Image 1: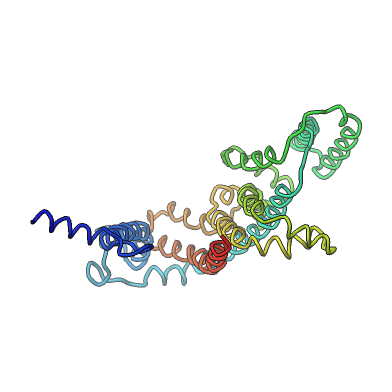
Image 2: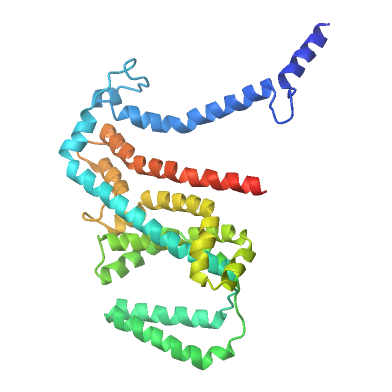
Length: 352
């Protein structure tokens, strides 16, 4: 009898009452795990937040977790940052916003167009011509770096030489690469560790006089994140029916008009997700920023890292304030773009 009651209780706990509704026991386990994981993920943010309201004694004699229970919070770190270091913080914050937004816009625009081209057009560039182009560009870079030639003249001569050689010997090359090879080559650029290329990139921007400028960081960030945009947007464009584009072209729409007025609105879910990811990568970029900027174009990650090298040691309370200020724009952007991502997912589910 007792065993039968246990089985009946387990049945009521773990048997779904209806289709599409979880059993009470299952709901308790699932939501319990979700609550635990949410607390695990948000705890570092909570810790940074409460640390920004601590003083040096509280930080060094901690850990303390609960304001007004374990310690008395204060605003001294916020006052110090916005009164004493106000200009440096504001400059780094504005630099990060300008560089991250501009590089993201440039990267998403160029990357989306490249991804659309790879999804809708068939390319068969000859392998020999690709190798010839790379060889000539390496020669031009060597002429600039070792012989001191003007970079504009060197690359203009290199392009003209490539065009002449391509017309002369291009027909003898037979082996070609396809769209899949190009797409894999694009994403393979992210496999290469950035530290391998950062010194040549530094020398290149030094030669053209763009070090410690917004333009240098915008170009560098856009180029680094471009493969991710191409890879992600290619999959979204490939799922869009080509019949809509063919109908628009029959009505006289150009390829660019079709892309901006038909394809991009249909891929707004992927566009929003890709934009958010690219923005986060650009906002948190550290390696390129520390090599290509010094004072005028310094970004927030560099400002945070600089707090580790102070004469008074690591000022965790001030660093926490800067980190909070640093993550606010990304959180706001995520909230704005989440509406488009959710809407696109729901539309896709209804269509499915």
